Amino acid sequence: MIGVVALVAAVVGGAVVALVDDGSDDGGGGGGAQATVTAPGGAGATAAGGATAAGGARAEDVYRGAKDAVVFVSAEIAQQTTSPFGTQEGAGASTGTGFVVGGGGTVVTNAHVIAGASAVTVRIGDGRARGAEVVGSDPSTDVALLHVSGARLPQPLAFANSDDVVVGEPVFAIGNPYGLDRTLTAGLVSAVQREITAPNGFTISGVIQTDAAINPGNSGGPLLDGDGDVVGITSQIISSSGGGGATGGNVGIGFAVPSNTVRNVIDQLERNGRAVHAYLGVGTTDAPGDDGAVIGSVEPGGPAASAGLRAGDVVERLGDAQVDSASQLSAAVNASRPGEEVPVTVRRDGQTQTVTVRLGRQPTTTGTAATPTP
Image 1 (spheres, helix red, strand yellow):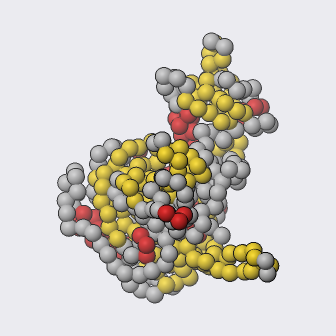
Image 2 (cartoon, one colour):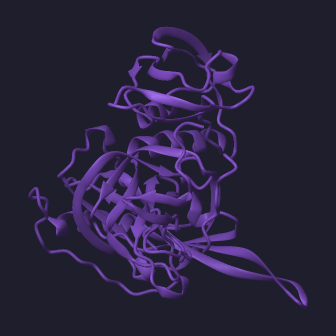
Image 3 (spheres, one colour):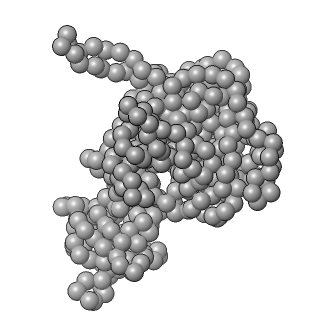
């Protein structure tokens, strides 16, 4: 795997963090938690708006144009509990957000919102809840595609080019935090090209960081630019956990899977019901002085090993992409295709050499994945 960030007990900003679900209440301990957020079900309409965000975008205009396409997603999750009296079957619920992305009843949400669901329902606006079919789910990018039949859906939201997103521009999140229907929050893009850990333990690259308030229940909702177009799907937060194992709320650090990644995965899910990703088969860290990605481990029998790469090599280039860090190597691999043959330039023992690597298909899991608890 390339630059995988640990899903649980990752260190962020000096605090120990645990990944919680952005659509379900996830337990977390310690002083800080990176959370994928989902929330207990509930209803009630709350919309914050009416102000001009930094950059001049009118929050009420963005909200008015997008709110009807934002939906409430609820998933029924089968659960097993073990007691002195034996194993008991039960059911729980995971709730989050989604939004309409195409005609014919197509809705996108986070994969972790519907993971393990025996049934999924979608409520559009003030209408009744309707059953939804899971077209496909990609835990490598935390994207899932749903199909809702028999409903008259509003105009789909349009996707912006997430490569054009810059730090400081205004953004808006619409979702269902703590079950509060279609809540609007506003903020700025705090950083770009972040990395977060996907539900299956792999790295999601090119992530957008924002200070717009994101809380449990926002998972799967749109992060919108000043034109009301989607730049990402809100997925995770850094959270300050409360006592008793409760998950804390927003502290101004949230993450959204970039729209270009989402669009690519949606296309694959629509065609095949699944998405595939390229795989190099190495673990890396940043080289000193932003001077490449140091290979720390090589998976035996993987694509990198087969091409002769080894621990200690410093990757400087993959294909046409310059590599100055582990995250850039991850992004370059994610932008490639399984089976593609790419030249990889490495520095070894003070000398530079280039080898050709035939990229593999990313496995289902890294073995370090953790499933968010609804």
